[in-house]
Length: 611
Image 1: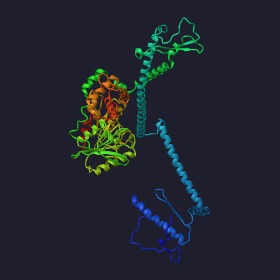
Image 2: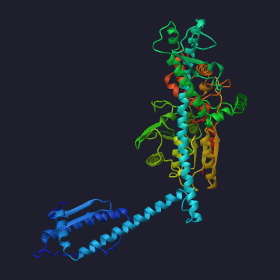
Image 3: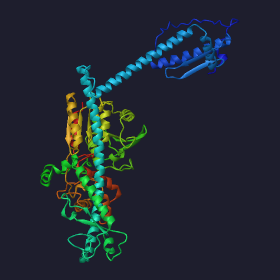
Image 4: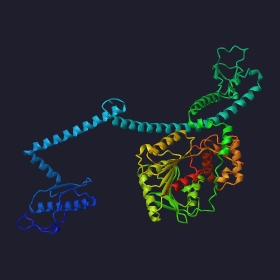
């Protein structure tokens, strides 16, 4: 650091003398300054003064001066008229011969001994904690310590089980997709086998009692043929699957007129068929343990039919709110992400923040318009926003930074955006609510610990309550979930009881499956008329995607309806409508999808908790 000598007051003939100036400032108490800003300002002033004095001392007194200062943030400031390193080496040589060398060494030894003892205590504590976790050395613990240990273990086990279930369900979903692919391959192989059997029927002398390939008894080929039974009948499958297959293997030297028969066996095709059938058996056994299958098989067709009368299709149509409100959103960009919002023309009664799920964006909630040309307006998302606007709520939607929401820095980013937007629109006096689905539901449960919501709604998610310290001022919470997701339902039931025990108001809305009707898609999706909706419904029935009562047999994400529809040339569908139809199929199956079916109950919940 260089100093300007012109700014330094020189002394007289006495090099080490300096003039003391009296000031009107009172005596300063020497103690730590608590205010961070004042402490930083004082540090800068005093540091500059100290460096200036060091410069004066070196010039006026011809002294060798080295000054080293570290700020509380670790930043280095230094001054030396020669060299800091050289001055330090000179100091070491001088101190080595002084009587203080032993005291310095002694002090260093004492310091390191203290640090060593401290580290040993920490290691011992960690080892004891590890033994306690393993259930060892518990006799020294008090009742309170045992309860705390039990609580920590239960939380840890809960996280492990949660992760295990997530991994299991991801594997099951993958296996379900593979099962569909294998079924398609299986159907193809069955057709090939049927074609082969028809060809064999034209050669009656070579067929006997259903065997595909057989040796001819009149010739002695014992050393040249090895019969191998490829597949025994499996009673878990229908009779047409019990085709007994035999493979006749030829030795290299055999060259009779039976060569064409051996070639017709098509060994590779049959081996593939065997492998696929065995894989299907494994899949069948695995899927028996899945809660989704248990729930589906617990309802027979007659029960589903009676339930269809008790739980009719969603009443809201895509244009239900046209007479009350129209989309006129505003799109902005802040903190590295986009936000889309709309305030009702009349005085709003509250502010609603809506968080999307994984792979979602803010544009999913709004129809395409001149104000938002890239918006796509998925059916359930748009109906939720329209219902909110019709009820008099100002709505703000924000896109996550990644595919799914994160629960660290992003919480503060979204909080800043919401507070900035509310202040800009002068809505500070209105109650604030939040609704999140799937990943957005987890995010809202965490955001509620840092923002003051009058109430929240968590959709198709159980929240992250096991990882948070929930206080009594946590907002009233409504769980909107689909009980077909049995694992999630169990966790929600547990959290409901925990929140109630802390005096927090809790509500639960269950969303069950409903049957598709010929007009379901035209009622829910803009751009699909009744004619196209009816054709799609008949297509789903013909392909076996829905049963005779209209219920989805499997989740819309698993069935290959898009590929099957592309192969069917009689039904023309715009590409932009595919994700809209996909969402409604997922919703009808009711396993995991954002839903507006019960939006009336959601907004009654919000309004009942407006202060």
